[in-house]
Each structure stands twice: as structure tokens, then as C-alpha cells.
Image 1 (tube, rainbow, N blue to C red):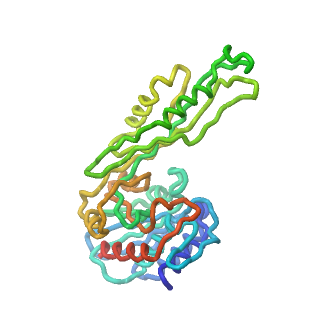
Image 2: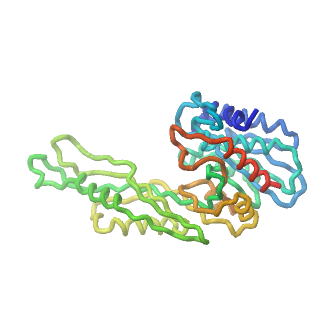
Image 3: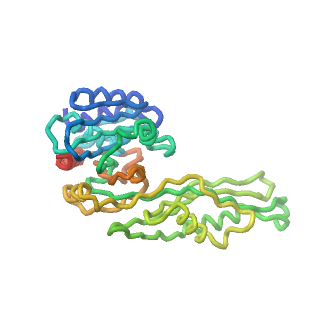
Length: 349
């Protein structure tokens, strides 16, 4: 079987978030074919570790869930595997399994982590479940998270801040709007300002991170003949690693500035912290050299931030074009899988 066939086996198993049980059992069974691994299944998460006598331990991780879609439509066309999760990130998972079951000697110990529920709320993350129940399994000197990066190292990650903005108004009859204050009209000013947002670029250890701000949900209105007294929108703010939640929130409130009045509400709904690049770490810097590409900043949030919270230097490195993630036409190529397998194997050696 080719690497595309191996990846197709995983892609064909439905594992939308919270439905990863079947895939977790398939992964665990495959890992147990290598008697040199200690394999432990924790819920729908699987951890496999070598237990030799090397002083350095490296960790390789990937999430096994996908966004919603039809796993049954996966197909190989030429040198491409097309289907839900092919790029994000079952192509890389198949390479992880291949290398984990390879008994060739290495000069380091390796921990392989296959975890559930990454694509939904962070509070449900399988990686956090492992950290809570079996934290020692995640001990490592450096980690690679196999998110799709096009074979380049994408260092650190952005934080993500979700904010609810609620604008106040005064109800009135729509025939006499001058007697009220239209909260939706006021919210329109917020939306227009956000639409005109110019990304802030933060350069950290030579890596650029472009902040982003988008309106992602809008709600309001009482009845067709009522001037609305409340209107709400949700903002998603991607935050560079040089800002904390409080600093990002202060900057956002300053940006909205004069649009926010007494009675309006601006509040945090969700926050996942950013992670700075860890390229001062010798192991991760060597991965950049092996990749043959200059390192760049990760666009978006990943569990590199979770590893950073644990004190483990980590970076993103995987097969597939990150721009294809979550798309209905996502795919990964044989060449991408071959390149990723070769470079990751060399790093682990």
C-alpha cells in the first residue's frame, strides 16, 4: 500500500468531533503492533511511548477529529487524496502511525499523541484531558504538532479572543423612530469600523504575526414595527503572541472607542492564549533546517499554545496546504506526504 492508501484508511473513518471512538481504537490497535511501544488509551485519546534509556524525549502530536462533512466521499485521484480531513490532518496522522510502528533505532525517546476534540471548544480538548488525567505522558523536551503547514515550520501561534458587543437603544414605534434609539443602526457603526480594521503586524524573534478582526455573528430586532433597543454582534480577534488577553481586550476597546456608550456591553466570551516562537530551542531550530524553508508565523490558534503552557517548546509542522483546511475540497498529495515523512523521520533520528 502507498502512503495515500494508508491515509485513505483514516480519512474513510468518520471522526467528526465527539465521534472519534472508532478511529481511536483503530489507531491504538495499529500502534500495538509495535511491541517496543507502551500504548495507553485515555477516552478517545491514544498515547504511545518508547521507553528506552535515551536522555532526550521528543513528542509528536496530532488531533484525530475533523470538522463536519462526509467521510464516505474520500477518494484517491492520481497522486491526490481528496476528502474530509485529508489535509487537516489525517494525511499527517498516517505518517505518524507509519513512523511510530517503524522499529528502526533512534537516538531519542519518542512520544506519539493522537488526541480528540481539537476542532471544537478548547475546554473539551482531548489534549487537556490527557494533561488532567495522565500529565506525565506529555513530558518532553520539545514537541511537534502536525498541523498542515505545507512542509514548512510555522512557529508559535496566534491567540483567539471572542468578544460579544451589545449595543443599547430605546424602543419606539417604527412610525415614530425619533421617539426611540435604534440599537441595530448603532451596531452598524461597529460593523463598519471592524470592516475597515487594518491588521497590526507584530514581529517576535524575527517572525511576523498579523492580527485580524472580524464580525462573525449578528443578532437583533424585536418585531417588524418596533425600533430595537438591543443589538448584538460577536467579534473574533486573532491576537499576536506579544499580547495577553487583557492587553488585547484593552486594544480592542480602544479601537471601538467613541462608539461604545453607557449601557453598552463589551465582554469576553472565549479566550485561547497565543504562543511565542520557540526557535531558540536547538531541536526545533534543526527542524527548520531540515524543512528547507524559512520559518513563518502560524496563522491561527493551535495546541502549540497548550504545550507552551506546559513549558514544552513546540512548533507546527505537517503535510498539506493550510489554506485547504476545513474546505469541502481539501486534499493532500503523495509528494507532500513523502516529504513530510522524510523530514520528520530525519528529525527523530
